Structure formats: structure tokens, C-alpha cells
Image 1 (spheres, rainbow over the protein chains, first blue to last red):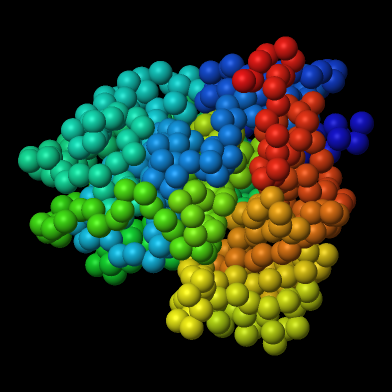
Image 2: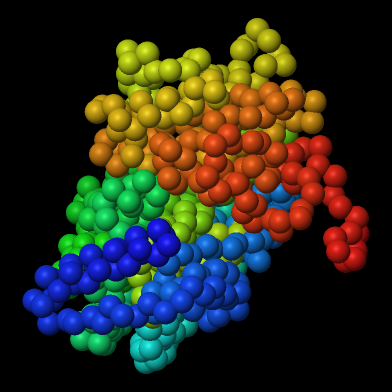
Length: 404
Length: 172
């Protein structure tokens, strides 16, 4: 009974807040409670973005409890890391956040390089940043397309996939794969860009810049979308920190923090000093700070910032080697390092321990989706069942990463 | 702040449970077997004092580690008698990081849960518990995280034996 009444209180508070924010226009019926029921959401529901199950307790239209159950996609990535050679593990990194495989490659390579203590050729760093940012755009396109799909807007999805298709074709040209790239290697990148590739990236940037305002108007500024997402699933400042949220989820709650600027790695420090990009932070423009609309908006604006970073790299790239001289069987000196990079979903951390052998002692993957998902346990109770989909979609999780 | 600054600050504060710091060093030229240590520096902390230590890290004005980014464990070797607990902290205000390592005896792997300090550690601890057989005393929700509820053994232990079958499904 206690849980029920707190959930109702939360909902009533939220309704009052929404009424204040919306100028008293919205009227909510509060006689939505009927009886306690357990609803099994997933493991195959399309809005779970993978094979995930949320056990929801409902009371009529009100969600009173939520328990995410993970592990359906557990593929023992960390155990495999202790059993294969350093370089052999790279293809496995593609498979946790399969929408941002370039960033995963980068995170793992940088962690091993931190223990090795080696420098990367400058052209390789440029290609790394270009690929990581293009992949960020591709990942955010999926985020915004499928989010629309989750809450009933079908069209943005097709536009998102049209642009993403081009991005994947670009990656296919540079490394031969469309999803699991393994392009960024320990010591640099696998090969140099083929002739004409950089020019095509520039063309992609031009085209994307023209299309982007259309998508923004189509979904983000759409009145139906705003009504559906503003003031829904609010994550306050302190809650975001307490749950260890990172990436767009953290920035949407008004916390101005991005690893690319604040703890710069690769070339990002230099790019930031040049003033080439900025960090979008949620402002609560359409509703309350930290709501679903803010999270989508942050991702949307980040895409354009990524374009600016790519352009900076295209303007500054020089000829040179792309892969350092490393032995085929890598022996990493004893030591350990934790390296966190800004993935599209937040901080991707790799903690690697070497005992001086050709196999790692420990490869730990800290996936941003994992921690970002934990917030559902506290966020869903008190919301309407209809909003649950909007909230889960706005966390933009990839189940391959939560389960690894 | 860099690692040196953070370590000095922890010493000034008499942070509970702080045992020392470990920094990377080059190989000793006199000893041919010594390969040195590379990578990141970290602080060593007594696992039983981890909760008050994290409180200091979170609440001190000049440290202000608001985010617990990662909490995990490591089993360094089959014949090693210790497990490591590895914690990664991040400060949004001051833009610095800290790695913490605790050594926990394999014979009695119990330490207090850090969930009261950082809510973020709840899921990390659940994963750690099932993978390494560590008990986090006072954990509010000690269920399995990624493995099925009836899974036997702790897969990330170095002495883990792979099961031959699971519910009639051959694993060989």
C-alpha cells in the first residue's frame, strides 16, 4: 500500500508541475488506479531495443514498480578477454555497442595503448576522430529514428536510415564492414583512407547539414512529440549524478560535462581549443529540465557538433603513416589502466590489467548503457504506463552493451 | 588536480582506510627480471573502510567525486590469495579522475556495500558478486545481474570450471 501511495503522490506532484509549466492547460484524470498487476514488458518487445525484460507493477494506468531483468544477450565478453590475445580481442569490442563499433574499438585500443605507452601517428589520430564522430552521428540517427518509432512517429525513422546508410557505405569503403568495423587498431588504424574517401566525407557533411534542419523540425519541434515527451521522465541534477549517468543523459539534466572537452583524449583537446565545436546542454526549453525532450534534443544537436569536428579534421589532415610499428604477437608490459572515452551513449570505460604476457589478466568493460539503464528502477514508478515506453526509449540503450 | 594533488589531499584529510599509492615506474636496471609497471596510478584502500573513504571523496570540496563510474573486481591469478576491488571515480566539478584498488582475501571475500554512498554502485556490485563470489554486506537487492538465477560458480574467477551441461543442454 505504501509503495502505491508514494507512486500516486509522485504522479500528482508531476501533474501539478506539468500544469504550472504548461500554464494550467493540461488536465489529468487521477482516478486511474484500479488494482495491482504485474506486467511483463519484453523480452522481445520492439520498444526494448534488444532482448531486455522489464517486470512492471501497474495499478490501472499507473506504473508502481519496475525491475529490469538483463542477461539475455550476455556473451561473456570479459571472460573472452582473458582468453584471447590482445589484438584478437578487438573484434569482440565491436559487438557490445553495435551501433558505435568505431568508438568501442577506439576505447579498447586506447586502454591497451595506455599500458603500452606508445604514441599514435597524427594521421591515424585524425582518421580515428573522423570515424568516431561519423559513427556518433550514425548512432544518434538510430536513437532519434527509433525513438520516434517507439512513440508513434513512423516517418523520421526512414529519413534517419537514409543518412545512416550513406555513413555505413563510407565505412564499408574504408574497412570493408558495415557494422562491426575493427578498423581502429592498437597503434593506429587498420589502413589509410582509399582515394577520394575524404572528399566523399566532406560531401556527406554538406548534405547532412542541409538535411538536419528538416529532421529537427519533423520530430523535435513537432507539437505532438513535445506533448508526448516534455515533462515526462524527469531526471533531476542530483539523481543523475547519484546514478552515475554519463553522456547525453547527464547533459540533458543540465550538467555541462563532456569527456571530449573536460578530460580530452586523442585530438579533442586541440579541436576544442580551436573552438571547432561546443557542448549542447539541456535547458528544459519545452518542459522541465532533464525530461525526455531534453535528452532527444541533446542528441539531435550533438550530431551537428560532430559534423563540425569532422570538418576540422578534414581541414587539418596531413599525409603520413597510419599504423605504428607493432609486433604481430603483442606482449604488453605489466601494468593496468582505466581509460574512459565519450561514446554516443556516455562514458565507455575499459579497465585492462596486463601481467606482461600476450593475454590480458583482466578486461573490464564499463558500458554506458548499463548504468544509464539502472535509472529506470527509480524513474518508472510514478509514471503512466503509456509514458513508460517514452522513458525507456529516451535512455537510448543498446542491450548488447548492457549485457556484454 | 593531478594524481599527486589528489593523493596529497587525501593524506591531509586523513581519509579512512587509505593504505598508500602505487604509481607507474620504469624497469629497475639492476634487476633483470623486473619489468617495472606501466599504466595509471591508483590509491590502495582497506576494503572494510571503503564506504567512509568514498564518502570523503564525494563530499570534500576540493575532491568532489560526484560520479562513481565503475566498480569491478579482478582475480589476478589462480594461486593469488587476494581479489582486487577496482573503483573508478570521476569529478564533474574539478574534471579529474581517481582509481582505487582494494585487496580482499579470497578466503573471506566480504566487504560492506557502497550503495549508500553512490546509488550507481548497486548494479555494479550485483555483477561483481555473481562473477567473483564477493559478498557485499547490506546490499539492498542481492540478486543475479546477468547470469540466470540458478547458475553455479563464479565465471570470472581464474579457477572457474566450465559446466558440462546446463538444463540438459550440452556445453562441450
